[in-house]
Image 1 (spheres, rainbow, N blue to C red):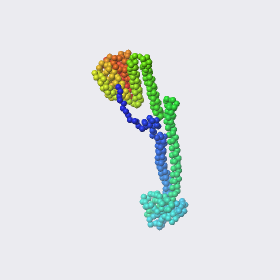
Image 2: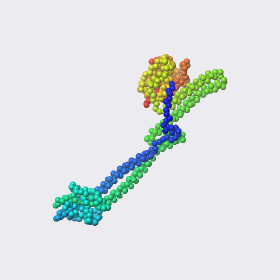
Image 3: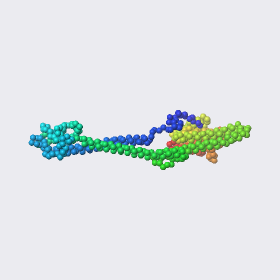
Image 4: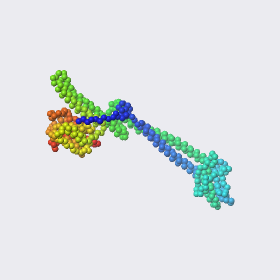
Length: 471
């Protein structure tokens, strides 16, 4: 029972290119993609780490510089006293000689409202400008550019000395060029260190990618050996991440070998089946046999039966290799029953069972199997045909029963009836290939077919087992 094929389009551009022998399209280099990802992450992490380390080291160096200024400020406060006129003075000199050298870059100053500023000799004729009056009596640090070409780091604190109600502002300033030089020096070291670290990480990432992708190159070489050296499997030891792909590849190679072997078997069987009729025709024609026309018709019919049989097997094997097929059994049985009922209008059909049962077989092949079984039951039965879908739902295989109320088949003939051209009732038209095609197509899909006696109708019961879809 033929099912019209549905014509597809011309295929995608990629499929056309592959069919034309061109190289299949690709999405770029896997190694380049991994290298770009590694380079991006290394760059981002190094930048973030460099900025964080720069801020940390800059803060540490600046705090150390400020601690030195605060040490001088504390010494000033500890040495300061109020004189008879209310002026401030030191009861002992500061130990750092740089405060005595003019424009040395280290300065101090004490200012109080209504009093003359008390200055270090290093200020000479200059004075330090305060940022503002702080009333919390805590040291305050800030940068100042009040002197030309001499950036300063200043610490300022407000103090009320014993014996005075004046708020005295103590200031200590130092040229921050030394601080900036230290910061520039470690930044330069930081930049070079991170640059060398980044290059080293990129080289390590490159080596890691090269080493990590080496199994794929070994797979490519193994596939090349299959094509050039006659190997039939990839047997090289490979990492477990690549092994599933290799197993699928070996399974595909085994499947292709099986398909090729089946094709050779079909061709050999067909050639062998056609050899005898062709020999008969050749002998009849050479001998100028008077019944040549009858011989030609008879042998041509035999050759057509053989061709139909092998074409059915070839179609089933080809469709099985396309992918995971799926077909609803009850839908196929109902469609076949409608077609057969037109040929045998006096036959009563009864179809029942699981309407959700699906088998892993192409719908066209399922229709051909059920079509042969139901048509045989209608042809050789007594007028009643029962079809039961999924007769054993707990089984891994979906079981279909096709029963009739005919004479049945003796048990001794049930095995031979599956042979090509075997017919027990020669009075009714037929080719004797129906059950042979059913058996061959069912076995191609991993199923089975067997003959029994129907307990309900008394005729023949054909038991068809097909693999469930997804099972």
